[in-house]
Image (cartoon, rainbow, N blue to C red; front, side, top):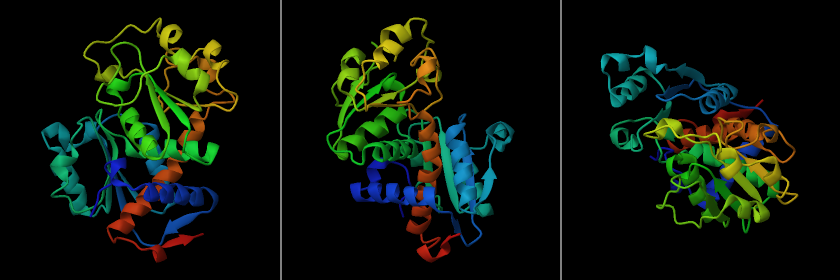
Length: 301
């Protein structure tokens, strides 16, 4: 059985099916008519991902098992594997995990017997964020093919950039990257462009924050907005139909002028809304994949 670890596990057809199911969950209420437990195991700080999973789980009628690393047996030396195995043993039916390691799944995959959903793996991948970004783009344009999407910011340290770039290219999007010197990731085989060039032709401008927690040294950002961020002047040169995305948290006045966060072309808070419904779709997807539920247990209410 597959865990939900990478967007690369999904076919294009499966991606579109998840987007369709998320749209269904946005318009009608659905609950799983069986008692199930979801363990939210976040070993890194999170607001949007953790809380949107919590809302998604409760909307589906799941019992939520919250975990607080600072008050857990991790403080006594317990490993990631033993923590997850404990939740499996006491009755969790699905585990949602965020961890600072890029490769934490390799420690768990052979021995954990409940579905795992990747809620963030170090600098490597963030597949559920990617899916909510895809949903937001698809709702806006009704297609992916031939759109121009520019991902801007700290590419080198961003799991969001990696997941999105690969998925968007597969779906027919023209993907471009833009980064300040030192923030590039040469392992990503996509063209780099300047932000001033990008704003003239992009349909979607996907901004990223500077991930200071993943840098060896904290970098000075006082001039970042003017040199590499989305200023009001740059925003005014974007195409009329172009939209702004950002996975958040937002550093207002660094990667984006604070007044643009809620401007007419911003879809930043819509992304957060969409995060709930795509995660509902992903939860039901993995529970069905593992045979824990079937379609008959998902009731419209």
